Image 1: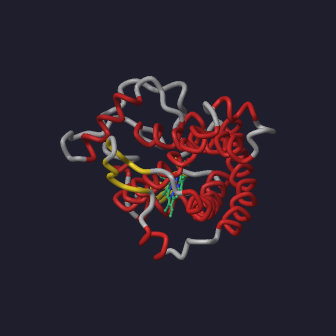
Image 2: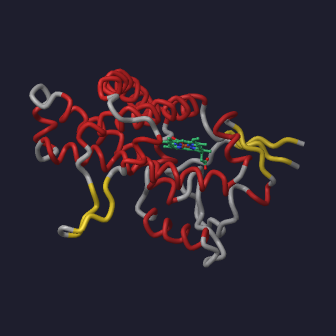
Length: 243
Ligand code: HEM
C-alpha cells in the first residue's frame, strides 16, 4: 500500500520556482556591477588569501565592461525578487505554513542530531513534520537573508532617499559589504540545498514540482524516534491512503 502525502501547496511551489531564476539573474547582474569596483578579499594583515574574484573568473564568464547592463537587470529584477519574496512571506503567514517552517525551541538541539544522523553517527533522526530542524533553520535564515538583501540594497542604491536603511546598516561601506556577504551566503546555501535534494532523492524533489509525495508507510516521513506526545501546535500534513 502506498501513501500519498500532500506536501507543498501550489503557491509555495510557484514562489519557490519563480524565485530560482530571479535570484540567479540578481546574482549574475550583481557580479557585472561588482566587477567595476571589486574591492573584497579574504586577508590576514597584509597577506591576501583570496580576492573576489580572480581575473580568470571574470574572463571565463565574460563579465568585464558590462556595468550598465548589470545595473539595468539588477534594478529591474529587484522588484520581482522583492514582490515574489513578499507574497511568499504573506502566504506563509496567512496559510499557517509558517508552522512547518519556523524553528522552535528544540530546533537548534535537533539540528545537531540531524547532522549526526546525516553523517551516520546517530541511528535515528529526531521526530519531524514537513521539514527537519536543520531545514527549518536554513529556510528561515534564507528568508531573513532576503530581507537583508533588500535593506542593504536600498541602502546602497538610494542612500539619500533610504537614509534609514543606510543608517541601519552602519553606513554605506558596511551596507555594501553585508550585501556582498549575503550573496556569497546564497551561493553556499544553494550548493548545500542541491546536495541535500540529490541525497534525499527523486521522490522528495518531484514533490516540490507536483505537490504530492508518494511514500511507503515505513518511510513516513523519515525513520525517526517514535513521537511519544502529540505536538498540538503543529498539525500533521494531510495524508490520503491509496490501494
Ligand atoms: C535547482 C534549484 C533548486 C532545487 C532543485 C530546489 C529544490 C527544493 C526542494 C526539493 C525543496 C523541498 C525540500 C523538502 O521537501 O524536503 C525545496 C524547498 C525550499 N527551497 Fe529550494 N530548490 C532550488 C533552489 C532554491 C533557491 C535558489 C532557494 C533560495 C535561495 C531555495 C529555497 C528553498 C526554500 C526556502 C524552501 C522551503 C520552501 C517552503 O516550504 O516554504 N531553493 N527546494
